[in-house]
Structures are given as C-alpha cells and as structure tokens.
Length: 145
Image (tube, rainbow, N blue to C red; front, side, top):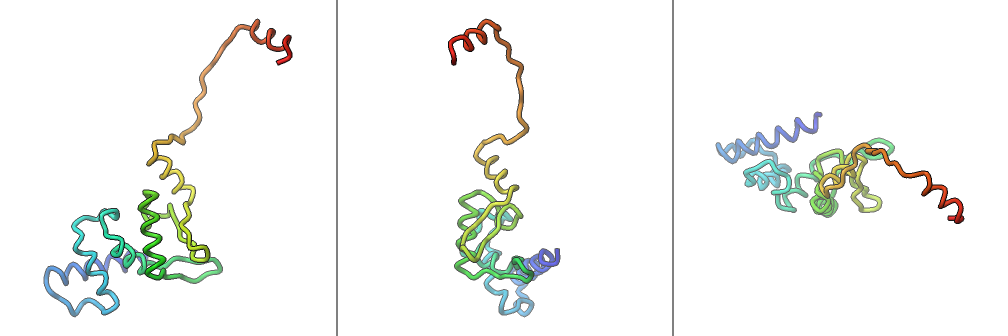
C-alpha cells in the first residue's frame, strides 16, 4: 500500500511540474518518470516500452527469503514487453518476474485472465442428460468392443 502512495506522490509531483513549473519538487532520481506524463491516459498498454520499463524499475518486488528487488532496465523492459504479449498488466498480481531465470511467470489468476482474453471459458462444467437404448449397450458387449 505504501508503494502505491509513493507512486501516486511521484505522479502528483510530476503533474505539478508539468503544469505549474515547480521543477524544484522533483528529485533528480525521479526525473526519468516525467516522460511518462506525456501519456494522456492511464492505460498501461499505451505507454511506450521504455516508459513502462522506467516505471517498473521504481516498483520493489519481494524475493524469497525476505528483502526487496528492484529490476534493472533490461529486466523491466523484458518484463513489460512480455506482459504486453500476454495481455496482462505488469502491475497486477497476475504475473511475476523471476530474475534468476530471466522469465515472466503467470499466477493462477494470470492464467485465467489469459484464457479469458483468448475466449476460453474456464467456468464450472455443465452437464446434460443423455439417454440411449439398452440394446446398443448389449450389442457392444456381445461383440467384445
């Protein structure tokens, strides 16, 4: 939750810089994020790959054994492009990045989202009642099938 607040603060500060010219509000480390403000929508798919990578580099990822990991530019760019290919948001809990294998992995929620995007219905099974004549069953057992 605190990371979302921090990201929101950066966006607000960057918006102030863009609209009011308060350049002293932006820290030097946050200046690459100003290019993201050129995007007029909040749709993650409309961001340029380099903008998405810079944004993902700001997000801490938890690692096994505790601690946090910040992606490098190459890792973040690969992560962003692969998420775009899969049709899942890199900010959701549908997908995670494995830095040891340099791979993008889907959670169960992500697999369901990809299936929905492809038009595959993974809902509960439906059953319909079928009936047939018993003579068909007897004939199959007599012939040895």
